[in-house]
Amino acid sequence: MREYAVVLLTAALVTFLATPVVRVAAIRLRMMAAPRERDVHVIPTPRGGGVAMYLGVAAAVLVATRLPALQRTFDDSQTAAVLVAGGLICLLGVLDDKFGLDALTKLTGQIAAAGVMVLIGVQLSFLFLPVADIGTLVLGSQVGVPATILLTVVTVNALNFIDGLDGLAAGVSAIAALAFFAYSYNLSRVGYDDVASAPALITAVLAGACLGFLPHNFSPARIFMGDSGSMLVGLMLSAAAVSATGQTDSQTLGSAANLLPLTLPLLVPIAVLFIPFVDLLLAVVRRTRRGQSPFSPDKMHLHHRLLAIGHSHRRAVLTMYFWAALLSFGAVALSITGGRAELLVLIGVLLAVGVVVVLSPHARRAAREARAAEIAAQRRRSRAAHPTARTPRAAAPPPGPAGAADRPDTAPAVRRTSAGQVTP
Image (cartoon, rainbow, N blue to C red; front, side, top):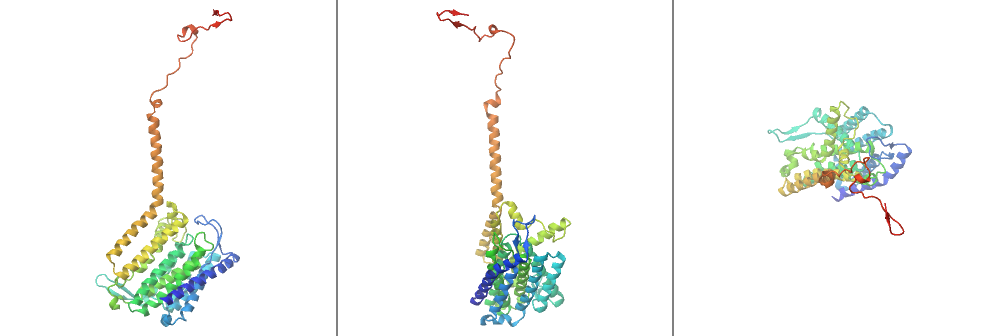
């Protein structure tokens, strides 16, 4: 555990120190994100922060090669595959941040980077299905390779889609990476270090890079991670999911067979990446129904909906953090404990709290509108109940040609002389 803490802190420190340098370079190279109609930032902001994150990842992996306890991580080529493919997809993101590549070009580059990662050593090999006594499916290259590439491309775009608020993608990615690390480290504790060490290292390094970048990216952001960062994070998370769950035959894990992730090995990665996946799925369905391209931008993502409800920028980001942490760490905790009743109750309570937090601005606005409507109704009832509203005022007699004598309440004018005599 100490060695993982060392590489996490290394990635965080290098990323934190490299980000200001990358920011200056991005400004000089005019890699600026100008405000658009769907954006929430109001001033041009440099992007390309993924370069600093990749530098942090590379430095942490270099440190890991010098730590004796982590030497076995490099017995296979998984870490090297992530490092090489991560560099390629980060370069692709830099080109997009600078020149604005079209969707087809980016998709082709993502497939190529995922293919390189698969070619070097990260690939789905097993899939355990506890349904109808199917058991473990051994995936050959004809199925494992396209499945790994598909999972990687989907994860990359899911992370790219949620990168819409300051600090959102970096924070959610850090939470997901820490949850994956806890899952992988638990597998190593039950005696399967060779399986768990590579994904544990990948996720520890990724978590450090995200945490080191977050102080520069949290609202108000001084730099964006851009596509270079969001695609790098997506690729590393997909690699961790494949390494942790897709290269192990769950039926061979003996003493750990009573753990939930070994009977449902896909639960943890789905839960960890639930927020990005749901946002991606909703965006594809929404745009397809409108006859638009799935990659066409709009302002209907989950974070945009939180802003529309009434959350502030920071509150919306923190709300997304809460849900990401609850789903990911809840799934990991269930996998480790086997689903204890106390934990299920706690997760249920936190789910209820999360729903209240999400809907609280809407509830406050509804309460304000209801109070305003009640006050308006009271005013209407008060005006209707007032005596002047029921009894019209007596109309004054219309003036006529008759003189003062015809008016009973009018007396003839008189005046008093200085001698006290009264004269008409």
